[in-house]
View 1 (cartoon, one colour):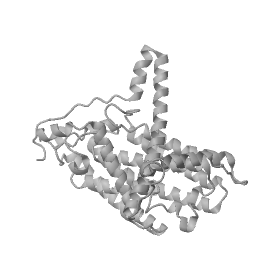
View 2: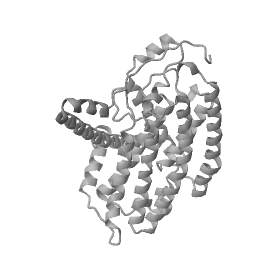
View 3: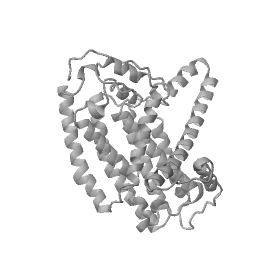
View 4: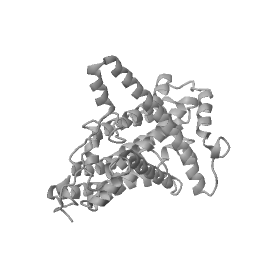
Length: 370
């Protein structure tokens, strides 16, 4: 089962939006600019609709976990509730504290949304729907995610409020700490796939997803990524930066109106982004479920469109994150940091070492077919 199977690799040509724009530019610069502007508008609409959909979904998921109905009055089963909330935030007065640094107070939520937008453009949703297929996609997302930390720190510091500042400092320490474990888990997949390009990472899983194809280390890396990414985006049980019991909502205490909505938008976009990364790195992204040389099974799996595969995997990841939120109690600060520095990080280093040994020896499922 380990390496004597025929090569059944499927060739998927990934054509990104940036490639189409550059190709069109040689024929018609005006058409290329129009195409690029349309892509930007589509991304912004996608971000807005994704955030509103996730807010509604989380309310319903939380309600069913707690044996209640959730939103029911605005539209069928409350389906228009997110639109009503958006309109309320648009019309709400934007209040800035007198002693706040007004420029930084304005810039902080914009920086958080910008970080989410930059990360979003590097993720391939299908072979035919990718904004930019960068050859350093993994490194790019790891780099731009730091902008979100700066936005949170700026939001807390510029508010001139001790609760906001404490929440921002907690968030900064938490995100930077758990980013280490998340990166170690990502490096496991980078080593097995031999690339930092997301499309190549997806195609390297045409014989099986890395969560199981890399024996044991793939599953361990996935679990580390799951915990670390949940902490990195400040979601329960790691939402200490927004601990209402001691910080009165944390770093965005002094925000209202659309500025508060930007922080909210960034939070749910980050949930979508880490779910997309988890699906892409460990579950094959848009790649159907293939198992070695099981030709008939693989052909049946190919009948499901790649975009639908991606949507199903990301949806499952998001549901799992929501399940965590409404199941586990919030950790204390000391428990949070102990989990990272004394548990996840040592396990991550050991797992990365074992993954390196398996990669060099070729001792993993179907190594000759990647």
